[in-house]
Length: 74
Image 1 (spheres, helix red, strand yellow):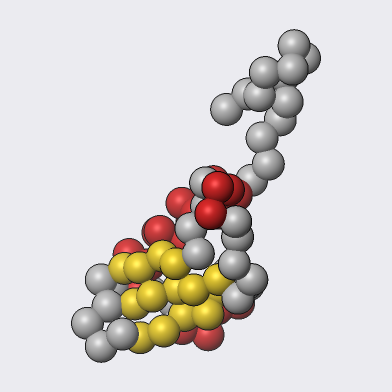
Image 2 (image 1 turned 180 degrees about the horizontal axis):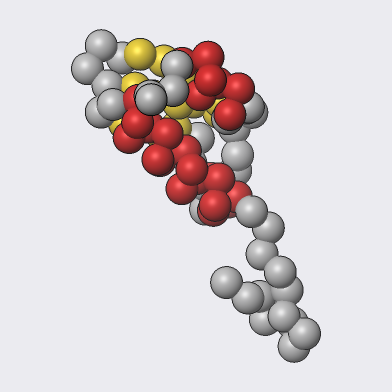
């Protein structure tokens, strides 16, 4: 069963989601730095595609665990 817009908003706090009449856009409510490797805007042709893109963004946002030798692990 597809998620409703309200369910998506509650699943991804910190994002404003907009129906763009031909696709969906999610915009961070608190922008991240340009050099952070993260996006301030994610889009999808369908709400399901946008959800997948927001899940991908969430995985990128998780902190990396530093290695013992000081080189970051991915």
